[in-house]
Image (cartoon, rainbow, N blue to C red; front, side, top):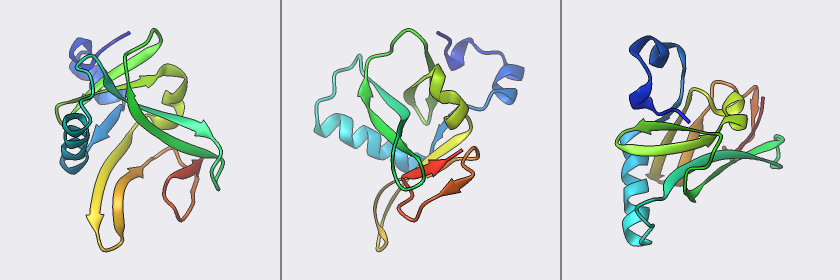
Length: 123
């Protein structure tokens, strides 16, 4: 398991990870405090089969596991199963709270097709 802190500057530049916007990080912090998420849990980002475009994003809180990559973005530790990195490497997660709705949004450079709901994609 590697962490962003263990990577050298060239590796960080050539190994895209997971980026959380300030708004997404703020919402994660709100969720953690309102739901009393244990301190040893991290934000886990993954993919699951299904959704209108073939795969859906999965967000939750979990303890790090063997085979996870850890990233730190906007002060939030994020864990991703190495098997999911081919779908998630370089993703930016934002949080919107407006007239169009409220929720996390995903900007995934690996997605070749997305659906209108914004939570499923194909790669």
